[in-house]
Length: 122
Image (tube, rainbow, N blue to C red; front, side, top):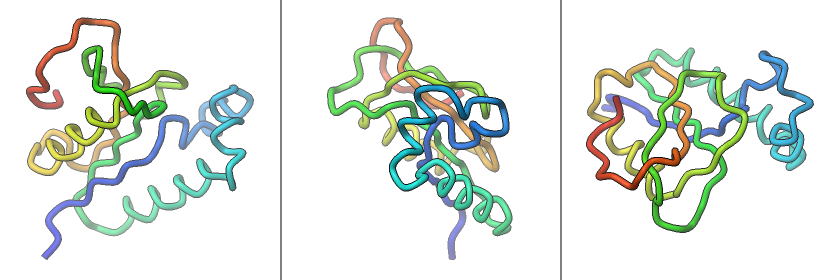
């Protein structure tokens, strides 16, 4: 029995809705088979499914370990930034059991602060 779905999407997935279709990040990412448009279709499907969900929209993915803190932002607010894949995984796992993330979209990047231990999302 599925209790919650955590979907990894991308910042700018809904970029057309808030005037970002001409931004470099949107153009570059969506050039690969309309990836952002397809992610938006998947997000809408999940939202309509009736399942509890968290949609995680990371910035550009880095292979390196995190060097900054976690910046969690509201839906449709980020149009640039990068984040370690490790930190994205941490957010996804934490979202499974954090009721504050249920039926929410989290846009995440690393900030310029010092690295710190990940102690939850909010």
